[in-house]
Image 1: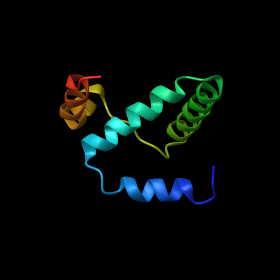
Image 2: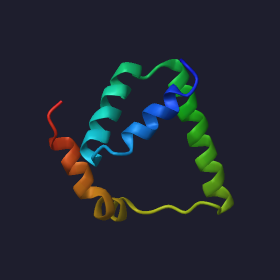
Image 3: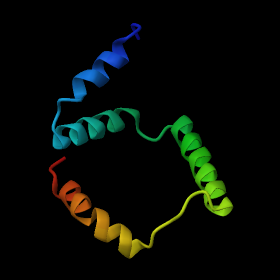
Image 4: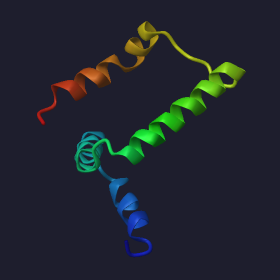
Amino acid sequence: MVPGTLEKILHETESLSAEDKTRLADQLYSQVGISREIENEWRFELDRRSALSTSGKMGSITLAEFRAKYGERINRHSERPI
């Protein structure tokens, strides 16, 4: 990639609506899929979060709290056409 290209793209996405950002993220994710590299990164992140939780440096919420906070957003996402 040409130096500065990623930064330019990120700057250009700042003006997008939340819906367009979500659509862009979905399209980018579908191009990447779940590769071995991404799966390994997720495992690393899960281990990191587990260590933070165990040490008391990161809290958690219940599923009910999560649904109350993000339910509308999840429903909007699930109702979007693919």
